[in-house]
Length: 168
Ligand code: NI
Image 1: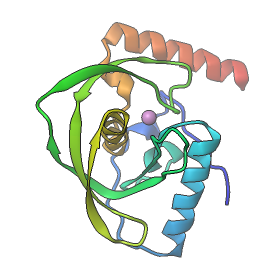
Image 2 (image 1 turned 180 degrees about the vertical axis):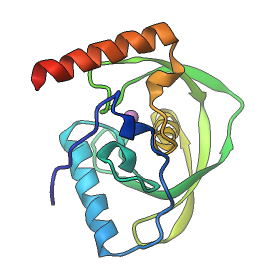
Image 3 (image 1 turned 90 degrees about the vertical axis):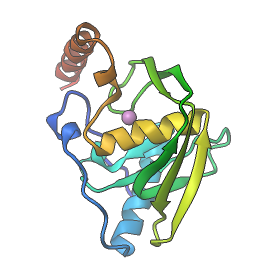
């Protein structure tokens, strides 16, 4: 297994749109294992392939308290979202140290394959529902800060670029 490098906002590669996964092979399963390891190591609850510069529709997440319930979503599609929405605080491994409110559907249903190509539908609520919506946005090239006002987003961009420059 290997730790993968996570792209940091405002890296333009975070805005690429991911393509469907077509091969459910050992290479894919290694990638899934490496993404999970990277996510746990970074203490994140979700990681989209886009964030590690792999532009395929693949997400890993684990919103359990014990961090022992990994969920793999390949070619995920939201099939239903509740009308009820709620604003909650979000963060992202690609925007370290930044947390802000984003409005999301309270419950969603998502249809996705696992790493063996088996398709199932999951129902998510609470943190997991937020995570599903946040990670699926990544696959469309969207980072959560894009829901914030242009003013806030620009401040975040400036802060991130300065932090990247300082650590270079
Ligand atoms: Ni994220």
